[in-house]
Length: 332
View 1 (tube, helix red, strand yellow):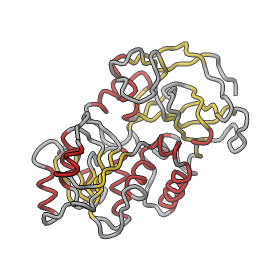
View 2 (cartoon, helix red, strand yellow):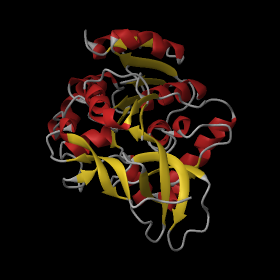
View 3 (spheres, helix red, strand yellow):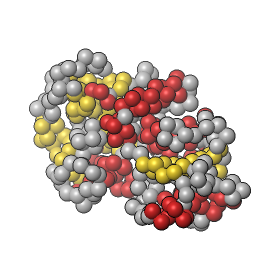
């Protein structure tokens, strides 16, 4: 396959948000460095990390102007020095936190690229290395979920939330989920036992009512803002765990006084990129368990909402407004 010297890509020109993302047609096609693969992108995943980077909130994130996007799936068309497990022609999905996935070609770390499962399209595999491992890590090795426990899942209609709801039911948990009212039927179809309105009412009070005042064993928190406070208040005293892996609704303040006198819970932070780098053995265990769930049919191929590459700013704005359901993708 002939590889061009330039390509179409989305370039972030400021740290003011996705409205300053622009389509360019002369971006240089990258060359794969040592330990990297070059893929011809067929689908790029849209994630909250892209918003964090666009607003300059991601620690160590790229500085503008930069090519945006961290998750891509497509065909391997070149390999860098030291790469032996992947060859040109293979279809993979992977993540590169330095960006460049919103483009026709991207270089990704080979160690973090996994083959697209047989029978799946490239776009269906989006989420395999971001959303689904995040959900599983939050539930199991970090959240310690076991059969018979109760879990509260915020933002349950999103890509990570949907996977978490399916997995939690598989592991024998009672699932209480939150979502905006227009997304409730989607969440119920995942098997959630109770679905609460994330934008109205007192979520903590409703959860305590559903649990006889005891609270839940585990909270998966990615909504941010006031819902972090609701999650802390809804967790069981002393033994309850709250795993925080996102802040879609903005930052929230919690003090040591809160943890001593108001919310005596286990508060756990999760960033899947950090987990991969700091504890690769744990990430390997998560992926082994994840592929077991795929083989068992617990998780099925996703069907993301696909936008054209030029519509990237619109897709990110919708994600930022929490107006989306499930996974979003861009097609170069």
